[in-house]
Image (cartoon, rainbow, N blue to C red; front, side, top):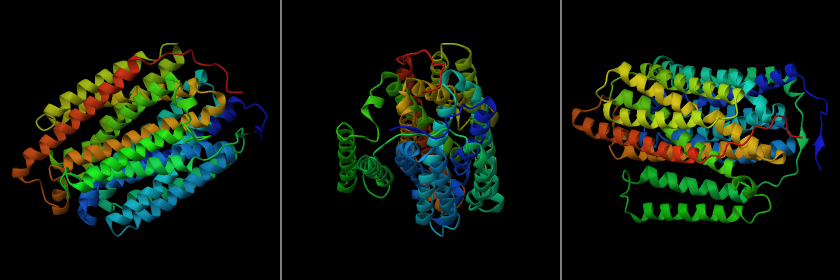
Length: 482
């Protein structure tokens, strides 16, 4: 039975305070997606085992991907506020483990714990916004969401690079503690007014285990293949076969469990399926560029960590501007598909161009190209979220929102592994361990590897474009879910 704990209608001031309070918590997870990237080469040199450095990102994304749908259902069962605070606590525990890590293995474990909290932060906050604002009105709150992502996206790489170069790489994790404390204190009162509709759910632990094991097997194959073991070795082939079998088992289980991780009634909806697929591919391409673009600037361009961090401002600023434009279009009219379609075309052109000029073009030219690419990526994300929440049934709002966050994170996990494998074949990890500059004899191989990385990102965006072209534009609901 559905239980509504706070039946009183919320005024505009209450809605605004609830959204701002929730976004304070989201800031933690948003910041950690960008602050780590410029420090990866430094971390690889100081902790060793640089061949596993991509797992610093992948471990976070893997666990956050797995728990995201579970948080969506737990928020329906236990309430948004309670689960939000649990997510913050777990995130901060992981931050402490990562900051104190004496080795790459411990750091990866800390990042995995962080991901368990970060996955909840992103999905629950989006669900809270869906609770207080109907799809047609949701664009009014885009300014707050854009402010959070602008601050984290623009400030994260800069702060991460500065801390890694002038303080210590562990400071990028210690900084989460005061931010988390402020988020909890400032959100206590506003979130107390949040309406809570208790929905009975069963947690799909089987599906969670299958998707986690499948992804871990796939990541291990991409990490070890071509570097530690030949691609045709029995171990790598076995990991790939095991991954495919586990993914097939996950799909089979979702069609037979009473309440699966990704309910078929949600995933078979045409709008949700296409918007989710486009988000999966776009997030894969965007996150891959976010993580490895600073590395290209350091190893090929010769920049230090702080300068590489500052270079990320162009990409992130472009994505924020693109998101704002899409938000304004959503608020203004009925047509919301042209903006992300045009954005996908822009990103394809820019990534392809970047692949051929990144090693020879002046720094300003490269920044202009990456800024336009970021703009193209940014046009999709708000449209995909609103389209999914608009298409979902009211009872599935939390589940659909979590499902979209799930596929976006999964796209990032797979992209980091694929792009990391491309660079590993060129021996980039060995140069991290060495701590010196890039030898001339290896430069051609490294440049070629990054060129393939950018072309792969462009090819992924072509898939995004195809899905967007077939996306149905349904009229946006004007009333909140009953």
